Image (cartoon, rainbow, N blue to C red; front, side, top):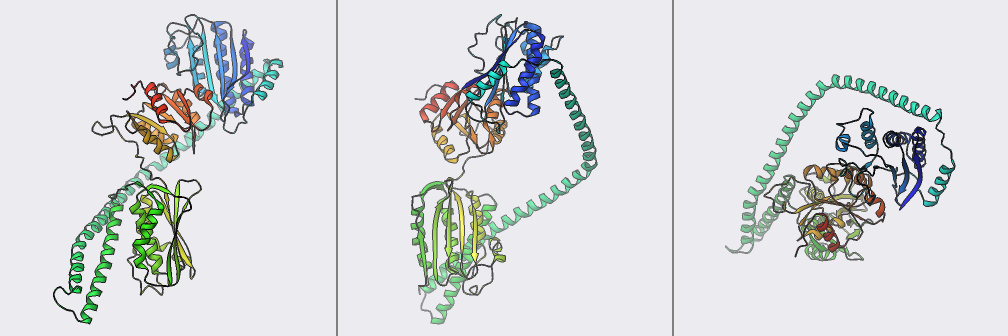
Length: 605
């Protein structure tokens, strides 16, 4: 939706000053700060002066586009003059006339979010700087020049309505322009304030430069020392990981032999055992099994730290996992005074993560709870968090509890809390640290609450969908998916990202998934996309300004942008340079058809 504020003629020199005054007034009413008001006013007055100097007459129009925040201020300056020769040189800053016209155009371009120029000279016939902007104006040879300036309003600016803009237009039409000394004085004050600010910043920079020079030598020496220590720690950590891994593997073989031989003895394969001998052999078997448990935990920790454990994400139902755990852990119930309860979720929960690793976390939690609960129950439950992006698993017991000063200690390797049950239930001190690292591997976290004498609750919060999105990578011809056409998908909702990945499967396209504008910029430095799918409302990012920036960049403006948003503001999006617009949810066939058209691909059979 485009709403015109004001249209004014440029016919005499006083009109140039009047255009600056109106530009500042309109910018102030739109909510721009004083600095942006001066920028907009300066850009308009520079271009209006060019109209008066080179074309004689022209027109300046002010309008607001968009129905959602941030809205877009659009300023159109046109004339019927002879056009601008050598436009490419002018825009690159390599050419300017003796009167400085080139400097005015380049300066105005830098002061706005987007700048589009169409001129009727033969040299400038293809000089439009934004796809779609200014199209349909009928500009041809001798038709003059049309310049369009665009700037997004601040996010905190009040939303401008058609009624409010109508009242504003009536006021401006009735208001005689005050182009006397006041406007010139205001311009001089702005210039003096800018010079004073530049002088103050120059002094600050000089002072900072001196301070940096004083500290630079010490920083360099400190970096060298830190690099040496970091390298030493890195080598020590690698040695520890290799030692744990090798030791675990070497221990497994003799332990397996001990367990097998003790079972043979207990089965009387080689003859009978006396009651005392059977008791001793069972002690040996129990000790070997405890050592095996310790070795397995050490090996898992070593693999995680070495990055050698892969997450195998697959869909599964939480209820099905609970059923498997119930059958697996029932033999651990050695006391009739303790009940193991599973509270199944009211609504089925389907997760896409590594079920085996999640089950290992819960087994450790439940096993610990059963060991330290003499009477009562151990209750296992799963709760889908309000945002719907993660599940919290709770294992609550009515056991002996843990004192506040010991609650952080239990998540450290080989740490155990002394209590009256310790002599009965020995442990390795590795179960809970392993749970913490497994949860982190799945993109989640663990926590606990406990009251001495009343019980404990151990919790694991795990994302509903495991984040399998890889970091942007450098193109290599030997990569199996490198031949796909790269599409940058800027979307912060994980389920929607997963949907796009399924859309592009068995298609000519390859997803480069990112969740923010910052990540999109990083990905672009690694690999240039052939197209972009952009969500307009991202957490912690301004998609509107990023769209304006890439479409005003000579190196990136040719990349087509497809908007996929839940909020409809099509005209503003197209005005900023979007090539297509979809309202969510986007259908697969429509999205692929649009990509085929924009990337000039034939429809796959």
